[in-house]
Image: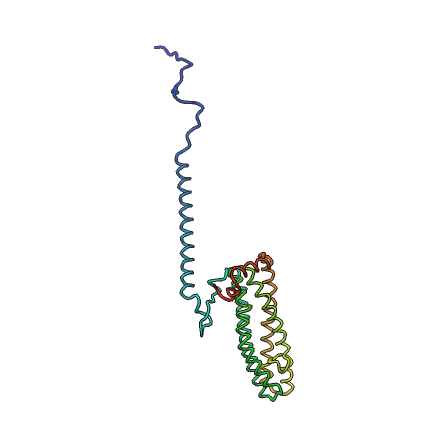
Length: 260
């Protein structure tokens, strides 16, 4: 038996091209496709979840949108949790709390002026009349002219809201200084009025005047602090007078005192 073998013989088929790339493993290709499909499915679920949340929020606002504030006679919708972006909620909440301090201070100021009148002040009648006017007018005007615009400003990030706030908020800061001073016959149970009540030994009027003066000071300093923060935010966000004018021409001024 011969053991001779042809050295030029090959065990490979002549049909095989030695220059072809080796076929990729099927398993890795299927794994990549499965991972891509899983990522797409996860994104679709996330979008559906967000859409459901927005739909539920829109439905809640549609049903309760204009009748939850003030609680005793609902006229407008007010919900920091539902309408203000999460990053801005703490600031808007503090502004709302300062407005509540203002409303309480206006009530205390009127009560203090009643006791100023009872203490025999020659200008007590003027003080009481003016304090009642402040309670009615300032509480409503402050909510509509500076709190509501900045609430809407952070909700919609439109320039005109901020300029409304800066204008009327600036006037409110000046008014707060005026009320802290407490000039007799102006309707303020502020500092000067309080000192006079202590001098008269009208203790109830004096104590109420002290509390009122503290209230005016707290809300005044608080509003001054946040006024600066809001101005910095407005500048960083790129708001401008040109944008405000364009928004005013498009929407009109009425829209800036409401949600819509």
